[in-house]
Length: 184
Image 1: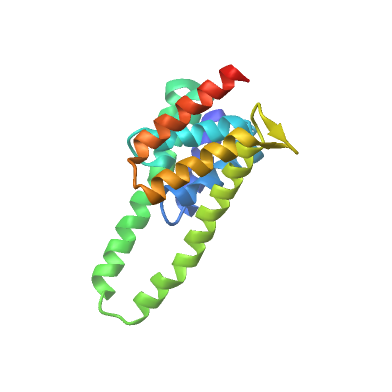
Image 2: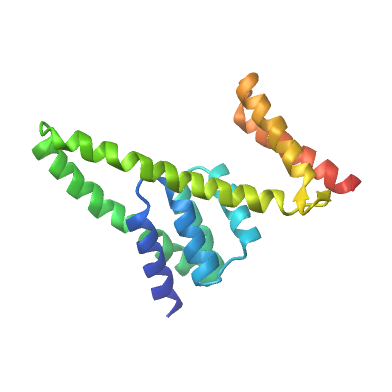
């Protein structure tokens, strides 16, 4: 039964995550945290962090992680198949349609209509993770983690102003947070 639940949940995620991995994050959150209670919100935030840092698509990495956590290796395989199966069918169908109708004028307007929805999905996931990140931590003021806010601002500044390597910034943020956790 758990295998069918994993398969169906990740088929839904794969089917409705139009726009790529970041657009899938709120769908993964809904399925794993809210509907099935497979993960807590804190575990989900860790999942997204690990899925972004490891090579491969975020949705596939997330499916593999959740599957292995819930039902071991067979669960990982089933969840991963579930998340990629809709893409295989949809991409094949869209490639056929695009090749057949690529000179049609309406195709450009259809594609441009999807962009705002994708941006909204990504923004929703980002805001949910930001709220979780700043509402957990050791140094708190009015329920907000001061450490998380300061690290976020420093990382944002280093990335935007000085164009530092994002991997080095992530490592530095982890080290800073680790040091602050030991001090406080």
